Image (cartoon, rainbow, N blue to C red; front, side, top):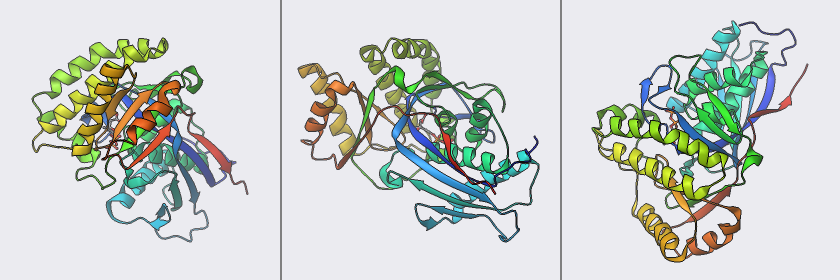
Amino acid sequence: MQRSEASPFKATARAGSNIAFIKYWGVADPRLNIPLNNSISMTLGALHTTTTVEWDVAGRLSADEITIDGERAAGPKAERVIRHLDLIRHLAGDRRFRACVVSRNNFPMASGIASSASAFAALTVAACTAIGLSLDRTRLSAIARRGSGSASRSIFGGYVEWERGNDDATSVARQLFPADHWALRDVVAVVSTAEKAVSSQNGHALALTSPFNAARVDAVYTMLQEVRNAIALRELERLGPLIEQDALAMHAVMMTSRPSLLYWQPGTLEVLHAVRRWREEDGLPVYFTIDAGPNVHLLCEPAFERELLRRLQTLSSVRTVITSGPGGDAEVIDQHLF
Ligand code: DP6
C-alpha cells in the first residue's frame, strides 16, 4: 500500500461506541480477530472517542507516546495501541515513524461501556489519515477489527453488520441502515463502575470451552435475517426478543466456560426483572441487552424514554444512566496540513 504525497502527518478522528444486538463472542482466529459469527450493532452517537495521531517525521520520539483521557498509557493498554500502530506503519510501508497519540472518551472508561470499539475505530481513521493511507470504509473496518473486533463496526454509523468472513479481507463490517433510519434509544443502566475482572479480549478465547457455544452460534445464524428484517421495518417488538435471547445466550456461554465468567452483579438482575415486569404488567415496550459487564442496555422508542428514566430512578442499584441514539460514521474532524 502506498502513501500519498500530500500526507498531513497529523489528524484527528472521532468514532462512536456501539451496542451489539447480535453479539460477537468467541474468535475463530485470534491473531486476525476473525469472529465465530456475524454480529449486528447500532453505533452510538452520544458516546464517542476522539483521537489525534501525529507521526513524528522529524524523528524526535524514540518510542510511541500514548495518552488516554489525560493519562500516559503504559503496560498492556499501551502495547495494544502500539501493535495497532505497527500494523498501520507496516501497511504504509514506513516503519520508521513513531507516533504521538492523544485519545479522549466522552464517557467514563470504567463505566463498563465498550470503549475499545470507539477507541480502535478512531485510532484507525486518525492514524491512517495522518500517515497518508487513503482507504475506503471497508478497508478501514478490516484494519480496525485487528485492534478490537467490535471496532470494525464502529467505522460505520447507524445500523451495522460485521460479516464473519474467512480472512483478513472478508471479515469486515457494512452499514445496513444509516442513523436516520430509526431513532432508537439506548438507555444504559449503570449498576457498577468497577473495572471488569476479565477483559472481553481474554473472554473471547474461552467461548470454545463452553458446551453451549456451538448451540449459540447455530441459533445466531437463524436469527440474523430476522434481526435485519426487524431493523428494516423498525419493529422493536420483533427485534427486542431476539436481542434479549442472544444476550442471554452469550452470558450462558460465558457462565459455562472454563473458567466460568460471571459478569452479572445483583443490580444486573434487579434491572432485568424490573424491565420484564414493566413490559408484561404495564406494557412498557423496553428490551435489554448486556455486554461483557454488569450494566444493562435498554432499548426503547424515543416516546418511552422519559417514562423509562423515571422508573429507573426507583431502582436502588442503578447508580447512573447514560443515553444515546444512533450516530454517524467514524470521521476525520481535523487534518493538520503543513
Ligand atoms: C460482549 O470487541 O471488546 O461487547 O476484539 O478483544 O477487543 P476484542 O473484543 P471486543 O468484544 C466485544 C464483546 C461484546 C459483544 C459485541 O460488542 O459484539
